[in-house]
Length: 381
Ligand SMILES: C[S@@+](CC[C@H](N)C(=O)[O-])C[C@H]1O[C@@H](n2cnc3c(N)ncnc32)[C@H](O)[C@@H]1O
Image 1: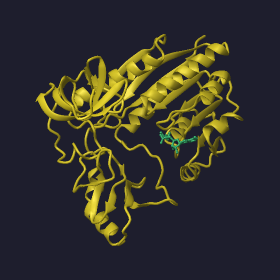
Image 2 (image 1 turned 90 degrees about the vertical axis):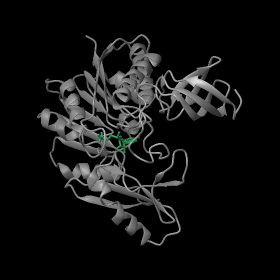
Image 3 (image 1 turned 90 degrees about the horizontal axis):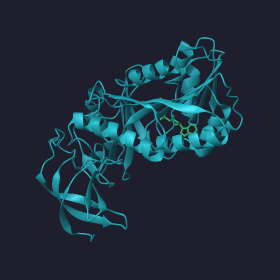
Image 4 (image 1 turned 180 degrees about the vertical axis):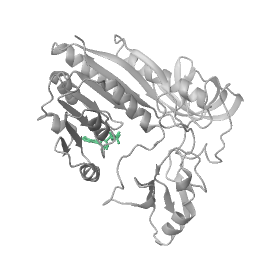
């Protein structure tokens, strides 16, 4: 495959990372902004030994799920990469991708794979965004670039935030800075719009679930899957500001609850929300915490790591501790699949019997390739 050469291709399906996949002479070609079954004329932009990347020159025959995005900058903005695909097809692709990825890493695992849970909103769902401002331009970075795509609106963002765009643009302009300004806008717990700068000294408010319309369903499923047995101890690893911690405390009224989170601002918020003696909120890296954790066989562990996932050490320590149930919430199918592989490999080495009971994907980030997944692991007795 030669860079700049043009070839016709047909898109088979979407890939992790969001590009469409085509094949040519046995080589995989990744095509951003494609749609399944598109017939395209593409130009090769990168040629490697095992794969190539290409850009669309012309849509020769659109796939059945291709549509023209409503957002005028959808095809250049770095924010959404699947607006050209209908929501039904987005869901189909995500559901298939998560299953395929788990199976690829763990071909021997059998589990219940429940139907994807759609998001109550497919637009106007984001409650936290990070726009940029530079040289009078307000917007988001373009795809694979630090050029700013100017925006007046962002259709995946809640309207209370987008209505404030003129005010925030003016606020940023008044700083009269020559530097690129990284901004953050979000809806606070008491429904107020807040905004500010992200700097080297201040990295913003930290993690919060961006889709508050879908988050209750994620919580509900986690609590349902955790079950009705009382646990002596409940561990919420990568707890953030306590999104799962507090509902777990409410459900398991006699359990000793431990939340572990690295970000000091989130720990402070979590600690401030609840002074119950049953709760210990640790500011710690989860791996360091696991070196002294006292997880027992009757306990419940919930973990919700960032995109990079947990680590082999953490998965090994969890297998060794053998809690009766583990609920793993993931925002990246590859790290989930890899962590499950580590977990089962170590469980086998240590002579512990676990099974992957069920897995379900959640549409948390419509119009993008990102997907949330919940997996339940339990002791196989
Ligand atoms: C996907 S978020 C989940 C947060 C929380 N469960 C929620 O639903 O809001 C992952 C969290 O892990 C935290 N984190 C990242 N790396 C960590 C580490 N090595 N140890 C502990 N926490 C970490 C992040 O600050 C973030 O709050």
